[in-house]
Length: 239
Image 1 (cartoon, rainbow, N blue to C red):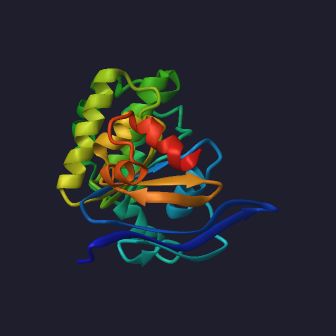
Image 2: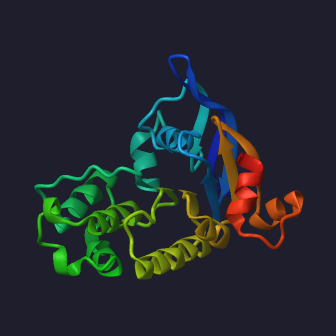
């Protein structure tokens, strides 16, 4: 059993003359929450899309649970839960039917669907068409889909958008539980208090590269900024 669940090795992605991600490497261990932070356009979502196999990198390797993602799609799908920043859902399915579809695509047991619906407070809406869901309900359904089957790796792009304060608190505790269970979590968020609270390590991105990496405490100490909001620490490295 490998202790490194996510390995990104010298990955680059270009769109014409624009370099979205440049020679970037990072790894995430079992039982670790790694937060990516950066301004819009820094390359966070592009990196996540490459990691889950939606966008093809220009070279080098991205591994999940030791498997090259482009060569082992079915193995990767079972081991991976992904929440994109912009959700695209099947609006003519009910919430329950959507999670059934996801369970089938992941080749995972559908028995936990009611548990995830209850956790994300969607039991009352499980028989309603997704097209009638509010923004918050859609985000919760996306989170339920990502976490269905208890995947080894969770990739969550701006998971707090659209959630109320109570659900944000529940999600924070859920991520902590996933870490305690030995899973790896990669999360991108603009909410710096959330990032500081949940993360073992933070990677600060600018123009497709990591400008700093370390635990929140290490980043504070290096910057000499121990008693300021973490967003000030972020601007120190990314500004």
